[in-house]
Picture 1 (cartoon, rainbow, N blue to C red):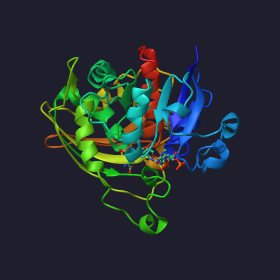
Picture 2 (picture 1 turned 60 degrees about the vertical axis):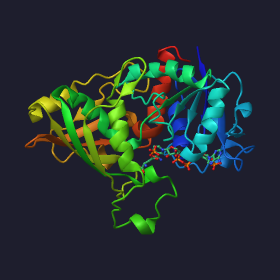
Picture 3 (picture 1 turned 135 degrees about the horizontal axis):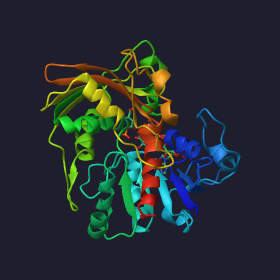
Picture 4 (picture 1 turned 180 degrees about the horizontal axis):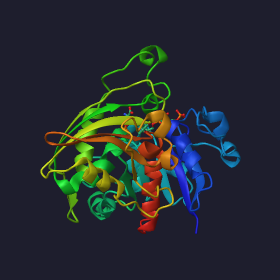
Length: 344
Ligand SMILES: NC(=O)C1=CN([C@@H]2O[C@H](COP(=O)(O)OP(=O)(O)OC[C@H]3O[C@@H](n4cnc5c(N)ncnc54)[C@H](OP(=O)(O)O)[C@@H]3O)[C@@H](O)[C@H]2O)C=CC1
Ligand SMILES: N[C@@H](CC(=O)OP(=O)(O)O)C(=O)O
């Protein structure tokens, strides 16, 4: 049976990816689009400055954009995807939850809240059961599930694969695409012929969200993973695809071959938007590269390469598409998991 879904913040960069990924989806039927008061009342085609590399689906182009408020969304919508600016999401997501909606959100507010599942279906699907705790504590019928920050979700699947060797300390340096900052985020004068060694708040997100994702859930609380994570985040002039250099110290000795095998064998999940193999590992030390590898697995696969031994563990590079696996695709996959596990 079709699940009727809506998108909060449907006209933005991530909202457009949601529309692209939902087109032809076997389970989800798009029933509601919301944005700011400036867009409300317009057709989607008039409201959105469409910049995704496939045309707006015809039926979506003619849909009317609603204001972002629970009474503007049809009651028979079962699941909402949220891609609102986090300041706006902080205000309005609780109103939707109070009204009984299940929200799979991409916005950064509440990711570290103790009663909010921060989930990657292949890594920590069991954390979804935090919804019970959330409902008890907040007294609402809805449910809020978050996907991680785009740089965090690029690195964490590889760390999940290496955790069997005892992760102690992780250092990561990122080379992040401009789409991560949104269409107007960095100007061409700032970024062409340049690299910017600061992305506000990003380092802290990588250092904390990764520990929650790999943390243990005992049915009530998630205890953060004990590893220390130090991140350095940089913006470079690529369009899409975050590339990261990871240095992982482990308690057990691990050879590059063992690390590659652990990543290659890391299990996927049987959900529509999930890639068959979660992590593709290159033997070629010059890969992964953003332009060549970001579309692997329809933008949902993580790539790794350059795996080498260090004095204390392993170093490697990893890459993922920041607006697909790192944003809309991640929320969509969480939505599929919510349906699969009976929360919707
Ligand atoms: N870009 C990326 O790679 C990633 C982004 N994210 C996160 O996803 C979220 C969305 O990002 P992005 O799509 O780039 O942002 P955009 O600025 O492109 O889009 C924001 C969306 O929110 C709507 N909106 C803005 N203000 C309001 C308001 N006051 N009330 C209701 N709706 C409002 C906009 O509507 P309107 O068009 O009418 O203004 C638009 O639909 C952010 O939280 C961001 O941090 C996460 C990971 C990656
Ligand atoms: N900060 C990320 C994108 C982003 O919006 O992240 P978050 O979902 O944590 O707000 C980037 O610049 O590439």
